[in-house]
Length: 169
Image (cartoon, rainbow, N blue to C red; front, side, top):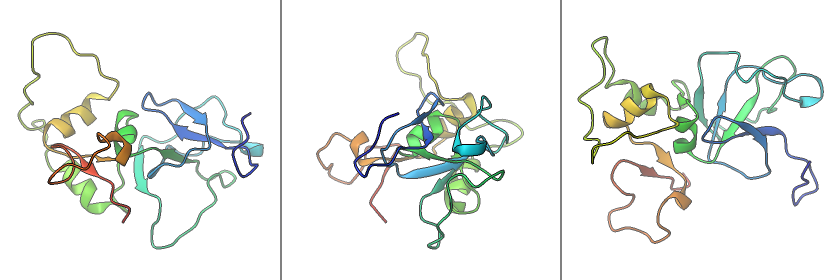
């Protein structure tokens, strides 16, 4: 296991865009939950989800601090940014990110999502993101992205169309 700068060993609770859960000391902007995935000693078992509510939450919610792996309760998962969480199949939390959740779910109805976006040039496109997440983005949902996802130079008017840049607030 890799030891990080402060001498600790990181927990296996960082999620890659593919959905794989790894141990890495890097900090992200968002956290999430798939139920309790760990056992004794804070080690993940073979199961990678126990709940169908794969959510993406803010790191700081009213100053509450929680154990990332309380025994038998839930396993906190961490994402670099919302784009990573969406790619891994997580949606905005209805509790701590209520407005984002409403924005995310507004385009949906029993008749489907809004009109599809123009796919660009003809040809097959392979994506890792689940179809429901792709549809929400195509219908106008703008995911929150880590500042490093941008070009490195500030853009006039902020982030590129289709995303929201994290501002630290």
